[in-house]
Length: 120
Image (cartoon, rainbow, N blue to C red; front, top):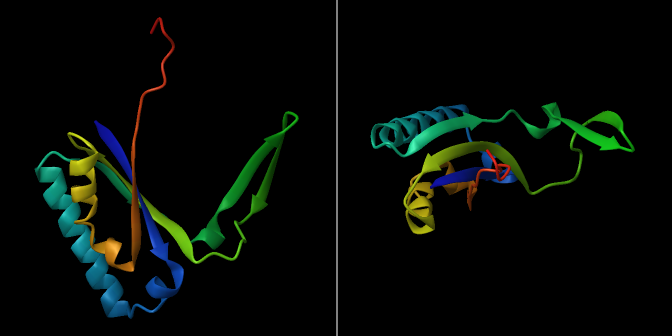
């Protein structure tokens, strides 16, 4: 089964990291990703830029609008995602617990499923 692990940072905590601590966290994360890739669990892992660099797209009554943001006051922000392969939710949660970034926020783990039409 595939599981999406959303990496949520506590914004205030991640902002406290020194440059050196940030580099160490990045290297620890790369090392963990490599270990998971070698074990066959890692499908893809990507970090996300800061929320202020995002655009929000909405379509209402067939008309798209694009705005800067999000600009909500938030305590946590989505910092990245990791798509893994695991036998079940228990194993997926155990894998997520190895992510070094979990020390600065949380990892939300969700099972994925394919959306297909019946005749495909």
